[in-house]
Image (cartoon, rainbow, N blue to C red; front, side):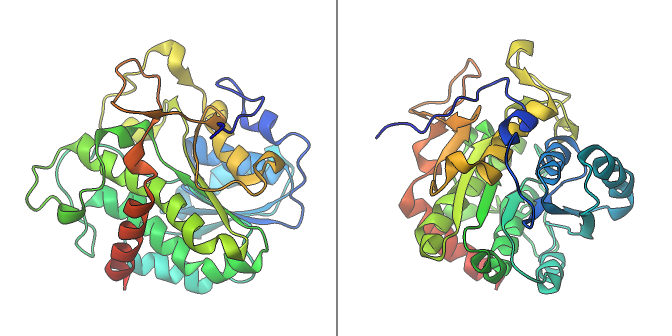
Length: 305
């Protein structure tokens, strides 16, 4: 099969990707929209005319960011709603309160390499519970709104970190397998990629499309437990560049009808058979495997019920 490619690439910014796109009348949600790649995603979508909800854990800290984004995007239709993805009660409160169709959902928020094994209020390993299961519950809870949009897009932010672990179906919470910070992160990001496949399998007939991506190596608060980026300087991106692939998948007409693929640098990534040691990226087959996606979806439905 021919790889999906665009004229954008590694150095492209979110502003370049969305240039000429009109999102007037569209509604979008960006989780973790108050910092880093999330804030730049909000800026780009709002700059194209969308009404954007920043779904964040700390509303107070998001307020000044939202004010700056409204000014820079020349769009007052940026609001803030509380959402703690690690707590399914918070997710349900958010989805229950949503009204009307939803055109774009960007599952962007995440945590990385938590040093010790921690659990969510519902007892799930913290990275899996936050990076994937919270987003899964959010997406499921917003299904009616997405279906009502007649062409909605769901963007799942994965990472090359997924190359460190498949989903460990028999021990999601590391009750038996020794916990490692990067292994748990890898599992959560593989699960995020599989969410895009699951949506494609189940919701394509309702006009809902979903793709997943690696945003690149960007210096943000995500690395607070890792001591900063380890990626060589020439492979690093600015937040504006890091948001480009998310924005491409969320809003570009180039992606019309495209679903279930893994992107990096604004192009479909290539499958690799082993984890690269040179920061070149790619995706593991297990992260887009239809059977894995089916198993994870069914299991997750039970976990959030």
